Length: 78
Image (cartoon, rainbow, N blue to C red; front, side, top):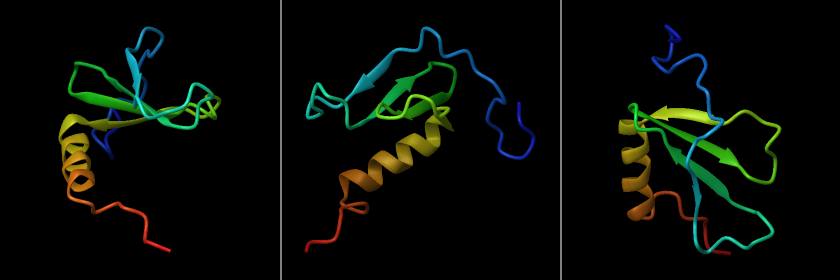
């Protein structure tokens, strides 16, 4: 466990159940999420799998989902 973030310092994601949005094209271009079942959620960019996934707590993930559902992260209209 990393003492500054409370997140695990290393997680084996070999068999992680990655999911992506149904709106994503088959060519990639989206974030994938793995609900790890241990209190954590992993997030990765499927266009750049060389970067390590970002791991957050389920609480942080729920807060972000709530904000997204309420339009807090919508792109500004042009």
